[in-house]
Image 1 (cartoon, rainbow, N blue to C red):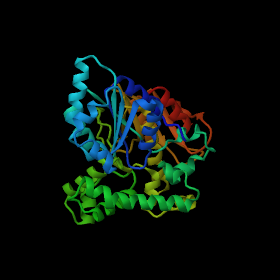
Image 2: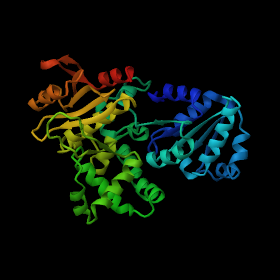
Image 3: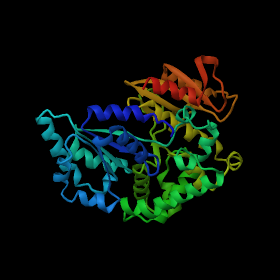
Amino acid sequence: MISRQLDNILAARLRDTPAVVLIGPRQVGKTTLAQKVAKQYGAAARYLDLERPGDLRRLEDADAYLRSQQGQLVIIDEIHRAPGLFPVLRGIIDERRRKKDRTGHFLLLGSASLDLQRQAGESLAGRVAYLELTPILAHELAAGKRPRRHVDDLWMRGGFPESLLATTDAASATWRQNFLRSYLERDVPMFAPRLPAQTVGRLWRMLASSQGALLNQSRLAASLDLSSPTVGRYIDLLSDLLLVRRLQPFSGNLGKRLVRAPKVYVRDSGLVHALLGLDTLDDLLAHPITGASWEGFVIENLIAAAGPRRIPLFFRTEKGAEVDLLFERGGKVEMVIEIKRSTAPTVSRGFHVACEDLAPAAAYVVHSGSESWPMAGGVQAITLVELLQRLENTA
């Protein structure tokens, strides 16, 4: 089993928070992580999967059942299937607080970010911590006990465990195609029954083909014969399911005209390639999406490792100064990052101009080679794994 960055963080949250909500897309490893936690707690843990009718029946009188689990860690998988549980949990948590009883906690697992946070936030405000489990990251793979795979394998196949660890490229591609189909046939109707899954699928493919482009809802709407607000709702759904990211632009007051539209990325690189029908690394390297796909892959890894106290943004002026990714922390630009699919990267004049405008504490160029070295102008060329480790150690 590959150790996840979130292992120790989850253990700490369970010690000091009455309820922890663990979110992440399907098949990313939430259940595996929860079962690992349950094993550590041994007899002091109860695991319920609300997709199993028997476990769902246990919660027909949820208040009575959950109160009977005093002193236990109760893990509830697929929590979005029982939104009525949240007020019950609030009552139990508040009662234990009044009695100064810190025994017993709840670990809640779900696949939809905004919807689940809204449901939990309405009832469990101040009583819950949120954690997101992402697909496997490059430095997690490098530190795993399995034979080390090259970062290119992770980029090509994506970070979903069954796709990444498939025995062949063909098996990995088949898994990802089935994953896409299951989301469109099952999850879209579940979370947004009024949205036609086929149209959502078309939009998903269009976003993959324009990976990392500025969001132009009007153009997408014209291509799909929909209104711009409707396209916005479709993108909201894919974002809520943690499949698409809107990366927001830097908006500080620099006295320059800045790009205001967000960039849009399909978050897992393996899904980008599946949506575009690219089954092997050779297919990918021969395709025009190569650079944009690598950029999105690196950005997702870095954001996941950076932690919640860093705000991810991009920077672009109308005159061409540009940074692929920057992190704000405490109101200041902590670092700026250029991303190159090259083992001998060069830095554009626009990046140096952006550094002059933003005055970051550090500037990096993440490349696809295996070494790091200093470049001109105080910029450092760095490998993805090394920067991930730096971010995690200072999160």
